[in-house]
Image (cartoon, rainbow, N blue to C red):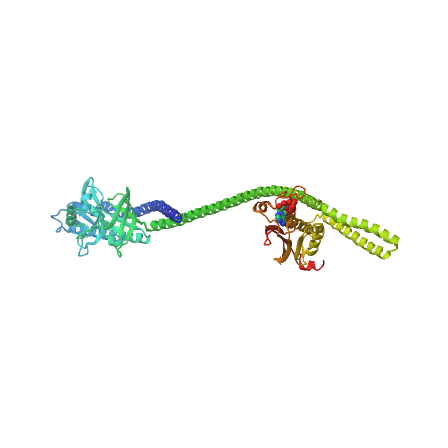
Length: 626
Ligand code: ADP
């Protein structure tokens, strides 16, 4: 992941660098080309200007040799020029002196170097410098090209070094004629070096080369008499013999590079004089000077154009880099905004999805809540009906017990009733006899019997009373007494002893319900003891973990395996139909569990059955209020 990002960045970096380089290269080329073009145009104007300058300078002097054709003494001198009579003839000498003086005067007035006249054999007849020791007079200059050219009827122009002094000069010659016949040649030697100063002042690099491509005028004096092109050895020999350039070696101009861009347009590379490693490049324009075989060359330095192009290229590179970076930054920003928007959209989508789910879940919860509520209602209703049924069952159980006890109770009531009948009859008789003491004693006994009967019926009423609530308080001792009282008829009939080892505790159960449980357990024990001598019923109890554990044991028939298995099932009984319904233990166990307790059974150590009733004790503080 990271490497791919780095690679991507690297590729972008390389593309950026290439783009910047390409941009700067293009700018450099365009700028360089336009710079060269404007340099060329400017150079062309300068070239024209300098060429005209040289041409007009030459034209300034070209008339001088021609003017001599109008000077009669000169013409006369040439006409009289017979080599045999030259030195002897006084008239000739006089004429020559006159011409010499004329030429001398003309030279000083025109500012030229020398003015002289040659005869047709090329010998100097008269010269402006006739007074000087190195005068031209008498010199044979027949080999000089300007002489040859003039003799051929043309205008001679020639650069050369003085054959005597080695001084550079520009020779302009013209034939002197009488009619159509050439009788001699007039030559003016001028100096054009002053032009070089003008070029230097104008800061122009100008070179004038002659027909041999030898530099005769140059802004840079070091370039004087250098060959602009290679000269063959043969030609060099010819030039050496002609003494045109005296004994100069004419070294070739050393150019590090030279390329032709267009006709008359070249590019030169010239090594620096001080630092050969440094190369100055020039745009070189040339033009032939009118009426001459000379060429004027202008060198325009390309350094500035190159520097300007370089500056433009750098600026373009900076601009390209800036624009590219700007585009990248804008792109990055666009990407970041897009990512942010996408994230926001995703968040909004997730939010709406969450809301949708919450709504769905809420609806689900609401429906399941409604369902639960309906179920609770149903359960409550079922519980209520169960409780009702349970109460009905309890009631039925009680009535069943009462039914079972009815024979005993009837017997219990019949006994005092019979006693009452007998006592009341006796009492009447005793009263009639006047035995009031005995009658009073009988009446007391009658009262006791009635009270006893009232007790029996009261306890029966209380036992039969409906108790709707599972909660309440019950005194254990009182409940045991009530149960025993209810069972008294059977206890008095059946020879079974009841032992009690219980505490006077208060239990968290309705009093009647506790009595009902105890009546059931004691009645079952009496049933199990039926027909056996020395029957024992033991009631024992103790407190344990906030509850009271009461055991009702007997030494009766006991609980066989098949009985123990179904003991608490409704309608399970081993007794005949008129004696048992099989509801006693079921009801007792349900009453105990409704009060938060339990009823279990186990074989007793006495030999019979043992029933363990566990019921919660009432809190201590509440017990004090009872
Ligand atoms: P019922 O007394 O009407 O039969 P119960 O639910 O009270 O109904 O008793 C169910 C059965 O449990 C009795 O039929 C009897 O077989 C057995 N049983 C109850 N108590 C004892 C006991 N103390 N000793 C032996 N068997 C007992």
